[in-house]
Amino acid sequence: MMYPALYAFLQDNYKRFKWVSYLELPEEVTEEDKENIERMLAERNFFPVYLDSRTYLKFMEYYEKVLYPFFHNFVCPSDNFEFMETEYWDAYNYVNKKFAEAAIECGDSNSLFWVHDMYLLMCPFQIIRKNVTANIGLFIHSSFPSGEIYKIFPYREEILASMLCCNIVGFHVFSYARNFLIACRRILGISHQTE
Image (cartoon, rainbow, N blue to C red; front, side, top):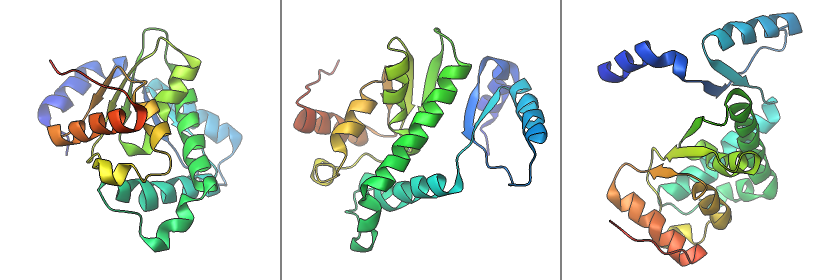
């Protein structure tokens, strides 16, 4: 359920926002139908990202079997080791790149790109590669792992570097932000100051 204040805000301001999201269409949809759907969605500021089912499945498996456990302070269970293979990481990166391309395409030089959660942690890096002056916000809707867990994550540097492409990164509670700052210091050698 959407909070009433947010709902009221979106009712008055929805035309200022552009939404990029995955859209799965049945195989029997014709190109003409697809164009009509895209036109109708664009009128509502919604821009779809299409993915083949195999790539989407690998992307979701990587999220569910690797990222989710790590970010919730669980070492990847041994029966999930296969999902740490490069092909799953590559699918995760590919999907993030497709989202970044779609966001850049429907945005402009003054756009603020707002990224939600662990599904798109590499999206800020992909956006910055195309637009070095982009304004990017990221909110993590879950925990950020402790240093002991995060340091064994195979792509720890890449994730941190992408998150640091953002102008602002938000977390639910201070301890998650602290874990992030500690990871930046220990893994990337980047220090911070608090104000």
